[in-house]
Length: 519
Image 1 (cartoon, rainbow, N blue to C red):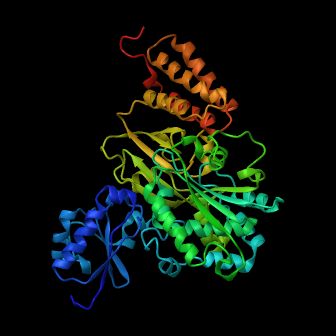
Image 2 (image 1 turned 90 degrees about the horizontal axis):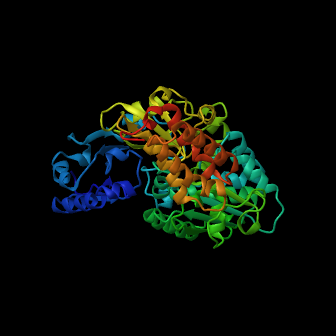
Image 3 (image 1 turned 90 degrees about the vertical axis):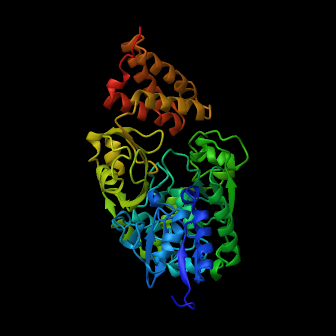
């Protein structure tokens, strides 16, 4: 190796990778390179979402990048000896990163830059198409960008699946002296981490999406409501917002357009229910995070009573390339009314956990088996929960269900935020149903009776069923209680809690059989 050559080595600085020792790996690379007098540059990129391979180290070799993983500090000396700086063979070698089957078979749209770029380099971001969508939006005008988002078929990726273009059009048409863009980054569902990966790996995409949304609807102020459990995302976003202001992508006269918009980062306080948009708005206003009555809708009377766009991280981050590449390019992905892509997150008892961005229409079985590799334990899969702690449990017999909103709704399930949690045949589904009610009891904001009281009674009723106390009467009572919670709760917290309970009863009734010694 010529001493004049500078080789680029990429070591992720992302929460999952850091928890597995990525900082120590980066230190070991730099220390060994210094000892061997190798000239290299260590770049702390984000994650490509292959969590089961973290920390995944990449080396730039010509126009390609070669990956090794999962790498531990003790592996670094051997990697240097194997000439990994030039893509040398090693037991940890994964080959050309772009050809890793887990990654190559995806349809990356929103996450196309994650792991590829330096998250805090504006130049790197722009080299990969960054801010081109915003420039095009300024050229075509606000009406055109709303039409593009509408025609793309983009729906809210936070869980509700509401058409984004309709929401934007409503806010744009509202008459007010002030409008807001609020990004809901309070990602609290079990098994979900797509928002976090994007914020840590490609924060400028989120910022660009918020600026485009603001331009489209006429807003001058934005907020990112970030969950407090994401300290690294907070650090990255704070730096990214500062960099954007310094480079005139935020503030006054953005990119010479005459448009003014700024974003403030707001930290949540650990409340799950603040993931619900109206509770989040209450929290932003400095009030307790209690759900609001609707109507009025936030699009008309949102933050501080003003018209407000509330969108999820992935929703907003999908917009820049819709603006850049056109509505048809996005709408070409997907099936039926489920257009574009969704970032599915594989977690739980899964062999290859990570983020998989796919066009709607693939099956749940393909996701779990082809990407996830089945259960980590090697035991038979028994249940899959999709859509967070309030999502339904699907048995193995439903794994061939297509991943789209309508197909899941037809089975009383939901895709939600795309979290997929896998369980093998050792799981106790009565305990999982009980947990759903218990979770609701703990996290309820307490404003409505069906949620506040119904969830507590739900735990008690399930306990009586398992203990074989007046079994038939309590089974009927549990079904009635679920109906009351669905029909009477103010928000999805209480309204969706019955989904995991009813699905567990439907597909796994044997787990609710009497316990030994029950009366």
